[in-house]
Image 1 (spheres, rainbow, N blue to C red):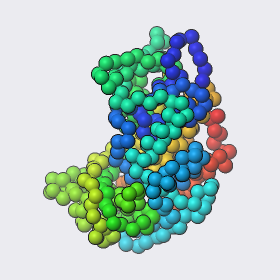
Image 2 (image 1 turned 180 degrees about the vertical axis):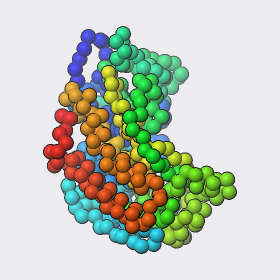
Image 3 (image 1 turned 90 degrees about the vertical axis):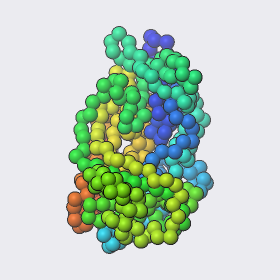
Image 4 (image 1 turned 120 degrees about the horizontal axis):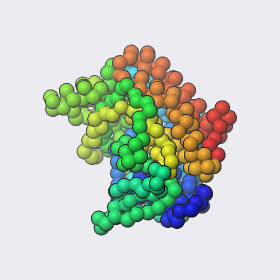
Length: 385
């Protein structure tokens, strides 16, 4: 990275140490950048997630030498994806492609920690229990570092020519630089998640019925993440009636999914995502950038968030290393636009099962194009390097 007249403590400060921030830190550190990563949470904490990795994410983890750790930790291999349209089943067996012959859905406690450990091994400095209390600006308005709140409650000023927000949908970095929304989705779902013990690994199982969706995703420790998605208004009504439990929503909206879960034992309390409209934010400016959900968020109904986050970490790191940060947002948007649009249409939950199946076919084509690009096989969109 380019040095300058300021005395910098680091080449980059990354706010957020989960998958997007940790992956970006690892990739920049491997390029000999001095990177500081801060996170207000503690290492190893969990977060709400569908966990599912698509082929592009698995490819990247393998390329980065991290997939073996994920597999050795007992993450079950997924070799079939099933789409159940109001009881009609379409099974898709995974064919080896780009060196990937299985998908995985690791717990976030495992995935995020694996990436953070890799960032530290590459030379990044990680500080947990440390929040971003503000940004430092020079006289021209360029970000020049961050004001950090340490675990003791004290503040510390740390200087760097680049601050990267990887701090999620409510990004403090985005707020402090005034990063505006450049595009917003029209639909969202409310999701209720819960872990169950005792379900067989039958791969990813995505259920759809009129006005609802759900799924079963096998993850670590013999658990499966089971979720139901309905329009926010439907979920709000169910809450008023006291029927917003996962079991209640399954029974009412997805009885075929409910039948699959019969006999399984709930292993944790349910977690609810009330819904949030997807968006693209302005994701780079003088001395700052955004990655992961901080810069781009799509509805969770297509379970593409982690895959996009790892892709964008590499796109951003390549752009920074090449001195072309200004190119990052346009490339990220071009890679994301079709998946974003299709996700928004699926999240409406207002189509017939035939229409939903057609949307999934289009989504599969868009995902394959992304996977091909990630694997470095498509020259249509030039890399930022």
